[in-house]
Image 1 (tube, rainbow, N blue to C red):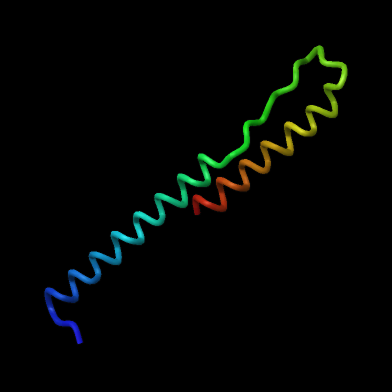
Image 2: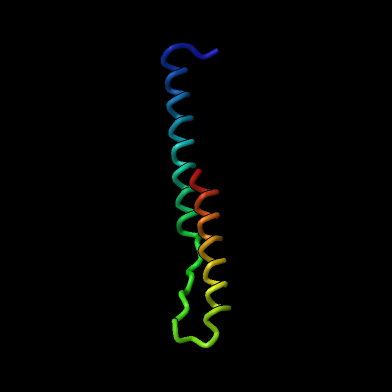
Length: 69
């Protein structure tokens, strides 16, 4: 059984590992997002491209939310 200083050192190490893991997961969620291309207003296929752009944005928001929380 750990006592005193040994227990404190163990908890500190666990907290550091959890902190690094949290930062890594959040960074992955941010850096792994898609590059969503906004369609030009004069594009004849604006409606379809606009829908795809909206889905891409929603996917990015969902990804960042999942990996940030």
